[in-house]
Length: 308
Length: 308
Image (cartoon, rainbow over all chains, first blue to last red; front, side, top):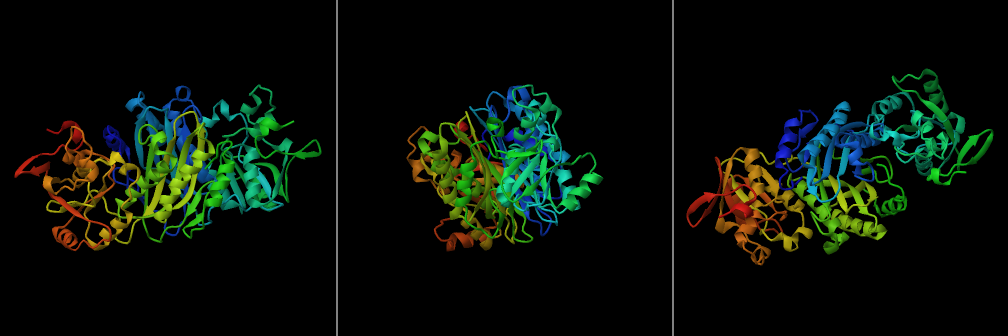
């Protein structure tokens, strides 16, 4: 990684903040980091970029929460493969007027969430420019011995479960959610997961990804979709159900699995702190919403802009 | 990885462009990519962000050359560890007025350079926003059986070699250089490399990184530093030597190695297409420039702003 002029003191500060980690053979301060994975494990890699004014509003959220979100959205992608996070690198474009204080607060937010999930901060690239704050985190993880869970393995007859109530995340959850890393690992141990995805675009949109990749359809039961308090409080032209179906950035997981596994999990609810909800099932084709005994087409995305 | 609204068609296009690669178990289109490394190899990871108006000027360079540079600067970091590139992920913030054509040209530039170095494009995150073009590439590589070459292993007595003439890269080379990946691998096979770095900040500044990490000093011989044609053509208040010492983004390598290895390489020049230059040696401490028989202090960085 190269460094922009004037960023060396910040990099030295970063290096002093970086604790030893057996997986990190070489951390910040060389041309690359060197990471040692569990022998035989496949490596998961994901990247997400957050942009001021688009993915967050820096003046409202503050840099620490932006840092937290930048780390958490990437962890959520590792969770969506039922993988274990290992290390992250962070590229930042800092507005010139933000200075060192902004950089440090951003880093603190990144670090808090990384620490919570045993993720090493292995390196990065820090730049200043005349544009707004931009931050790109790339997260490396590893698959467990059971392998990664893709979007593509769902089959007609599978039950669809979600890991929490949905909708209205714009009221705050999108900046302050807990990525479902631990829950995904536990689900993977306890069930034959056919497909898994995190809800970043919205329940209907992300379910459509599963359907497309798995070449199947899905039917959701309206009365079974868990509505968050935020969805109920949105107080706009859309119903709480519409928010739960269409709103993005809930970062809960949608899992497809055989009915026997699903039934056992729903009855036992064996994962600490987690309530699983049974929202529907996979079918041969189409995306459907069932309510009051009738089945209507569920638009795969942009649901809030086209529904009823 | 999550996708911004309206980017799905682009992602489909990307997936159709992505060839099969045995190392990529799962490419673009799921929550993460899945990459398989050589068993036992340590994983190298580096990230570099390029920002319009700061690292390039989009209107002058054009998106294809920006894409090429974004990939090449990361490959140069893998070269600086004498590693093999494996896969890259790309996060992009596109200006809204640039549209699909900008995204595709950027991708073509990325792809051209990635293909040249057998690097898979494994995934990414594509966003639109109101800001200027920003692109962050994260590159994964693997160390060879000889291990990665750090900045920290140079010892007093080592000779210092560079892989090409220096200075004036702003005249064009910074957008159109060939990262020294192949040359670094060959050097690593043929010599006991004690330290290696790519010149991104400038010869003096990057040599200072080696000295700092290796806890040693260095002396350069002014008449031995290879001056590029661009350094000679800069036609400003600085001499070609000052450009060679202070200009950034040459992306040549500085290598420290035992004199016997260096001497053999300099005599045989065994690497096709590469001329190695002997520019100086490591000493106990300090950074020095020797010319006309006298030794003067070599400022470790910002050389062009403080020299003579």
